[in-house]
Amino acid sequence: MATIGWIGLGNMGGPMSTNLVKAGHVVRGFDLNPDAATRAAAAGVTVVESIAAACEGADAIFTMLPKGEHVLGVFGAPGGIWESASHNAILIDSSTIDIATSQKIHDASIDQGFSFVDAPVSGGTSGAAAGTLAFMLGGAPGDIKKAASFIEPMAGKIFEAGGPTMGLAAKIANNMMLFITMLANSEGSQLAEQLGLDPQVFWEIASASSGRSWSQQTWYPVPGIIDSAAANNNFNASFAVDLARKDVGLALDAGRDAGINLPAATLIAEQFDRLIEEGYADRDCTLVTKFVNPDESLRGWNPEL
Image (tube, rainbow, N blue to C red):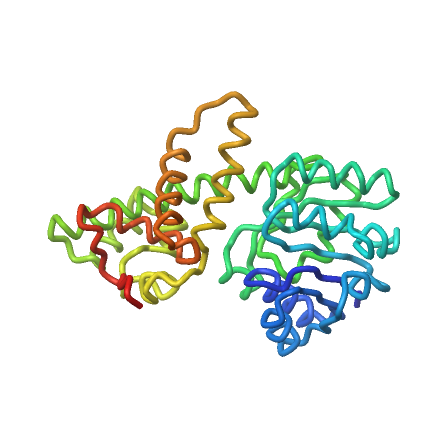
């Protein structure tokens, strides 16, 4: 079994690192949030007080952080990964960040004699807990193979997306598609209800028909239909609005760089911006459903709670 360093023990990193512990690995984890660190420690992660301590003796080092600036800081800061890790360790970033920053980390890692793989994930917090995430890997073929051996306990599927940053390219395009289908659920669910359809019956029809999607199966924005839906919990976040907006923004930036138009992604970004302006950045991204009804009423949503 291996020793693994883990930086970022939040809603995704916490359960992901726990699955490595369950697989028999020693995981040394670090997070600035004491609550996240406490939860990880209770699940068997050896929580340490610094990035350098997490890197000590590690065969692999994972980062799972909110933004590119955080990842770059963790790698390049005094006492950070580049300064503290063994050159024999494989460096793996599972954050969803911009391609330009990931390319900088790839290039700087190579310049300093490290192996680095971008390995973002899809499957949400439920997939992180269940160990069924889809990993999309970008990097040199040998580095991808080495990274995959450490990733397996956390994964349902592992995809070799291509060279450096191709894992992120796949993740950004995939998440854009996710949020566009989520918008379809918000409108379709409300239209069906206003037309008098029983919500459960309509969900079952969509599930067996062309309206089926991952978001429809997992995040359907009507209470009492899907256990994992935030609509059952007053739209407390399983995937927060601000993080969803970040991901859509990455897609829009990539689209501009590629010279293509992304009108549906632009629409969902605008709806996320409205929620953020109203003070709901930390609520679940499926709360965009409230914009369908003119009075913004929505079953399962009480803004006073």
